[in-house]
Each structure stands twice: as structure tokens, then as C-alpha cells.
Image 1 (cartoon, rainbow, N blue to C red):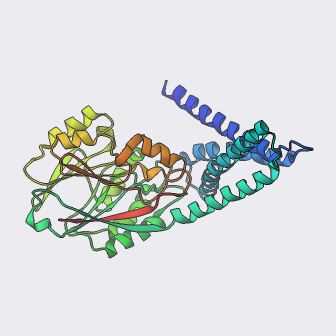
Image 2: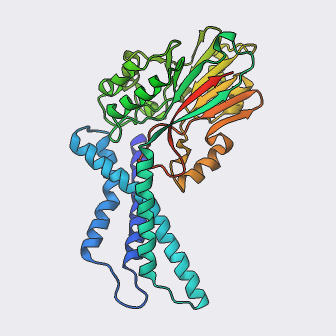
Length: 369
């Protein structure tokens, strides 16, 4: 049954990609006044591009050699450009149809050239922007915060997605930036790995340089736990990071609770995990969990501050609109629900297309007050 669902899912994605590529081909080839601009070679290239990402993804989950990594990176970049090109093609047809209705003449192919050029420019900018990791700073005032924690700093990083696009070199750069901030504690809110085939111990090795006086903590995200997380979690622990699995630790009076993805996919599961952690409502607490799915559950459990990632802030239009629709005000940044504060990071890496437009790759530095 699982294999059948997987095959159905892959087939549905491939059909959608074929339809989108057909639209792009027809948009470029169409001419209302004479011969079109299509060709056999253009059709072949479009067809190959249409199956590239699904093919690359299937290979990426089995193999980790240089050729597969190069193929996957190229296909992922193209998938990002495809989004902008699809929007450009849709605008072409909307404008052309509106012009036809009112009896106006438009240079369809000229319009397609300009819009496609703009789409590619937006994609290139998104590719460059995704590689620039910024430091985001915020102050958080917590009730009943232990005196020892006043003025201390914590670094939050999430969604690094080590795999075929980003690897240990990227992580090494992040670690250097975090250490330079001299945080008192460091929180990694899941999806350190992308889930593809990878030498996990080698990829996680730069975490050995990630140190803080009051600990480095990690909770698993969906990309670690879609399958067997034993491929990833031991590598993280071996690098000296404390992997929190439905547990609470106390550091100089501050309660730090970690609930991984599998234990937080339903509100009842998250509620049970928090109840078992025995959070003291009279003292400040931090919940580290991958996604900001059920903030009302954390608020009901007496959590002071929830730290999450997962949303990527949609990475780029139009997916950013969808992310805002799903997560609303908790899609990004510091927000409040009753006595609970939630900080959702847009993440340091990317999933799928390595592009960001309207969101930034970031490391969050929080100062407690």
C-alpha cells in the first residue's frame, strides 16, 4: 500500500510538471499572426527538462556520487526557474485573452520574450539571495526568567538541509558565523539533513566546532523522520550535540524541552509529550520543536517560548503566499499567543529549488530579558 501511494504521488507530480512544460513550450511557440516559433529541438529539450527533477530526486535518495549531485543541483535550480516562467506564461495568456476580448492587437511573442527574461532574472537573483546567510537579531522578554539568564544570548538555526545541494562546506560556514556571535546556548530546530543519500557522519562533522557554555541542542524535523532517523541522529550526537527526544533538561533554572517531529504531528501527540515533560508553569521554559503547527497546545502547557522553523517562509513567490495561508502570523518571526511567544525562523538552507525571493536565509540570535 505504501509503495502504491508513493508511485501515485510521483506520477501525479510528474504529470503536473509535464503540463507546466507543455504550457511553456506552447507559450514560446505560439504566434497568432503567422508561423510559430517551435522546433523539434526545443520540444526535445523541454521534454528532458520536464522529467529532470523527478528523475534526479529518485536518484538522489539512492546515490550520493558527484554525477548525481550535479544532476540534482541542476534540476533543482531549473525547478525554481520553472515557477517564475510558469507565472510569466500565465500572464502572457491572460493579457492576450483580455486584448482579444476588447479587440486590441498585441505582440504575443515579444511579450513572452520580455516576461520570460524577467522570470529568469528573478530566478537568478533568488539563487544568489539564497546563498547569503544573514544574522537576524531579536530581544525576548520572558516572565520568571532566572536572573542568571538575563542578558544572555541564544542562537537558533533550522532547516539547513544538508544533502545534494548543500554539504559540510556550507555547514562549516554557518558554524563559523554562529560561533562568532558567542551565544550562551545554541538551538537547532530540525531538518539539519535533507533526507537524501549522504555520508551523515562526514556531513555533520563541522558541528564539533559548534560550542556554547550552556549547551547545543537539536530536535529532529520531518526530513530526518520521514524514514529511518537512525541514519542521521547518531551522527549528530557523535558530533557533540544534545539530541532532545521528548525530554526536558534544566540549565541554571531555565527549562529546555525538545519534542521531535514525529511526536508533534498531531495536537494530541504534542500535548502528551509536553505533559510527560512536567513543565513547571511557574518558571520560564523554552520548547524546541520543528514546526509551529500547534502553538495553542504549547500555550496550554505553560511554555514561555517556542522555537521552530519548517516554514522556510515559503522561500519564494507563489509558495510564500501558501505558507502565509497555512501558518498565518506564525509563518515567521516573533509572535505571541496568550502567555506564549513563538519565534519561527525562515531557515538557513533551502529545500528543492535553492532559491529565495521575499525571504532570507538566516541565523537567529535571541537576547533574553
